[in-house]
Length: 460
Image 1 (cartoon, rainbow, N blue to C red):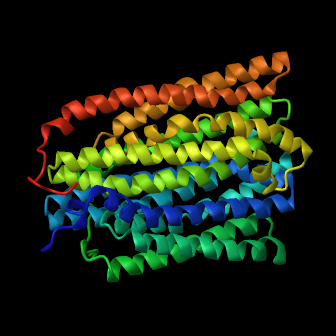
Image 2: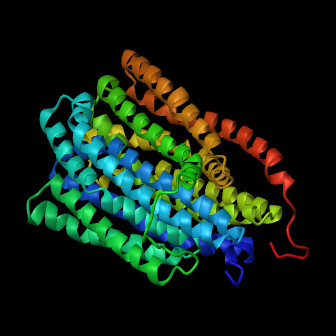
Image 3: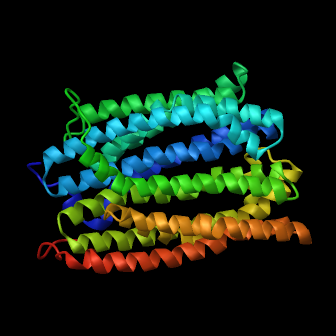
């Protein structure tokens, strides 16, 4: 702590990319292995791909608990480092690791206990439900590695060592990609093989992240001897992180309900759910860079808010909105131009192609509004106002998206146009942007505008 952290002194434009590019690179690798995972599964059969797609809501919930906890840890740790409170930063980090493994235990219990009911409700095709449950039992039962990898990577990111988190995610993804065909085809394990390869990749990423934290991360000190949970810190972590967990839980519920709506009302039934699952896999190549950008921005905003430097806070937010929107517009252009090529990655036949092309084109229109929503939401989380992001997520996914999808799907079934259901996404994203802007204006007036401009003559 003798020298000032780069989060408080490096020019903002350079700092954002310095912090974000390694995370973006690692997330793109992560997106690649998600797609490769599904690509190999699609070579088993379309039903196998459908099974993995129907497992996605449960995976999304588990990942949401892991990343939401990490958001709270990063924000609290960033403020402590910005205020030069070394002991508090260390305590936040250690309690965060404890919470990660509590979350893993909870995920294992819920996944193993409720997996069969999840698939039975979504589909009446028995062998799809069986394959999906086999996949989910392995992913949830061994979620210790996912939670550990996420938390130790975020400790690296929260102190500005994003290049090391890139290495850990990259290692996990590469191991997964190599092992997928071996376990799925060579060993003949099918979807179970895909799950085992994923877990082994997460284990490798977690081990490397622990090593980097112990040997390279000098801003925090992980000491567990005599550890007891500090419930005030735990409360503070979840005061910030719980809304993120709830947002991901809402997203999981939304995906679950969308699958049910599609299987019930769309003319193509399970094929529509498969196309929807493919959309989620492919759009990760668009959203992951934006999430990576914002994972780099959160500690910058938190640190400079802790240091009471308004100019650096506002400039970081302004640039993050601009960069995120540009990425999303580029993604929309690709989805509109070449949806057939994207679907061919998953060995799409004529029926899946007929459903998937309009799905990708219509849903991608929502990208044009999503970038600003994500960037502003991340800024509010860094400032301790995650509740606003949570409310926005509820409005977008449960108040607007699901009712709109239900009504459009039923009407589409009546008039013979099942593609109407996809328009629920652009409708929901417009609503989300309006609510986000209202909340951000309030946060600016009540929090940001009241802090000082920073040092005179400072380079922004």
